[in-house]
Each structure stands twice: as C-alpha cells, then as structure tokens.
Length: 319
Ligand SMILES: Cc1cc2nc3c(=O)[nH]c(=O)nc-3n(C[C@H](O)[C@H](O)[C@H](O)COP(=O)(O)O)c2cc1C
Image (cartoon, rainbow, N blue to C red; front, side, top):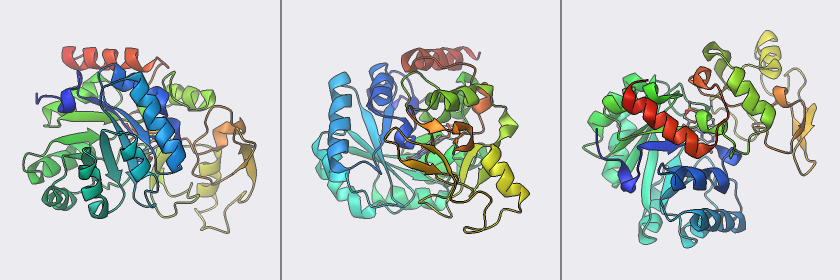
C-alpha cells in the first residue's frame, strides 16, 4: 500500500458533501486521523472564514475545502486566508485558481472522470487527483464504474496520487480500491450517516434502511444546477416524475409545491437540489436524498471517529 498522503493515520477521506458536512464532521474526521472535508461552494466569505477557523480550532491536522466550479468560487480567498490547508475542485476548470492556491501554501486536488481529464490536470501540476466513479452519491461527474475508470486514471496520472471516490461503504470496498492502486479512498454517503453530519435524522434513517438497488442516477432534482446528473435514493418525488415520463422543467408533477421548510422557515420546493438538514420540517422523504450505490452497507449512525477506526479495522483485516 502507498503511504497515506499528508501524514494521515488512515488513507480514508471524507468526501465534501455540500451543506451536510460542516466543521463538526470535518474536524472529527481529521482529528481522528483521516481527511475531513467541507464544501464551501455556497458559503459566503464570512461563513467560509468562520468554518475554516472552527476546524483549525478542533485539530491541527489537514482537512480539505471543496469548490464545485459549476459556480464561481466566491469564498476561495477567504478560505485560503483563514488557513485552509488543502483545496479540492470538482466540476470545472481549476486552472484560473491554481496559482492563488499555491501562493497561499495550500495543496490542491482535482476531481476527474476520465483519463484525458487526469492527463490535463497532471500537466497543470496538481498535487493529487480524485477519481470519481458513477456509483457516487451526490452530483456525479463520471459515466464509468469506479473499478474500470480507476486503472485508466492511475495510468494517466504519472505517479500523481489518486484518491478513489464512489460507492465505497465499508472496509472491504476500501481494501479493494487500495489494492487497485488508489492512494486513498473517499466516502461521502457513509459519512452522511454519522452523528456529526448535519443531515436530517430521517435522511440518515433512510440511508440505514436503504438497499443497493434503491439509488438512481437522475436529473430529477435540478434546483439551481440543471443538467448535472446526481445519484439519490428513489423516493415519491422521483417516482412520480418517472411515472409521468420524466417530463421537462415546467411540466413536472407537483412542480412549485412546497414540500417543507429549512431551519430559517424558507420553503423547499419539490424539485430542489437541497438535501434535508437538521431543523428542516415537512415531507423530508420527498426531498433530495443524495446517496451512493454503496449505501446498502450502512447499518448504523456512529460518530465519525468510531466509524473511521472501524472502516480501517475492516479494511486491514479483510472483514
Ligand atoms: C450529500 C452529498 C453532497 C455532495 N456534495 C458535493 C459537493 O459539494 N462537492 C463535490 O465535489 N462533491 C459532492 N458530492 C460527491 C462526493 O464528493 C463524492 O464524490 C461522493 O460522495 C462519493 O460517493 P459515495 O457517496 O458513494 O461515497 C456530494 C455527495 C453527497 C452524498
């Protein structure tokens, strides 16, 4: 096995999971020896500063902040100035931002979904690649299964470390991906079902109950990010839309309906791409429940440090 990057105790990475993973989760994972993560794409600069400082107050160990470049990275400068040690970019061209990240002394990784994408990022001099497979929960950049894409990306990487993401739910999955040459394995959905995640308790409970065949890759929950495929749990919103023939925007069943409210009392519309968090009310099960294809392995809602140690124990012992 390759040495974990950045002096981690375990080559296990928590994936950035939008607004579901805040400083509590990122700090817990990093503090326990894995790589924690926060997505700051939608954070204001003030929120980004506060969140980075909060993780730094919890642990001196590295963590990543993520920007999905389908949107302008408005809080990148704030995150770097607050001392974010590792930045990951997904969904876009990171080249305009690399010099700024390097000047701040941070490391940078980029999510890729093809060998060609990997080659281009290696030429740009990134520190590591994140190889995302089609099994991933959340927005899915890839159109290939992880175990077929990973060797292609590793071959194209010219020795630049590759972190594998998508569908990993337990230690066996981690061991398999490390044996296939990954330097680390990134898990998103598994960490959504932890005590520290901000996911609504009903969303966590649905992940525990989910079967593998229950996830769907769809464009149903388009919200503010149309055309980007995403993997979710099948639920009434998706099933009604599919039963109606998957009609386009403007003709979808129940379109414009308020299915619930966030903690600030703002309405959540039926096809919103917002995953339900603590404090949301209403029809939680009708909202966008992002989930990777490995969700059938999720049997409980542990705290993040126990989960990390358990995953690594399973991976090392072939359990
Ligand atoms: C709830 C949720 C939100 C996500 N949000 C982001 C995000 O903000 N940025 C990003 O690059 N990837 C995001 N992803 C994708 C993850 O980074 C990662 O690729 C994926 O979780 C790996 O698959 P897994 O969920 O099967 O482990 C999200 C995934 C989930 C489940």
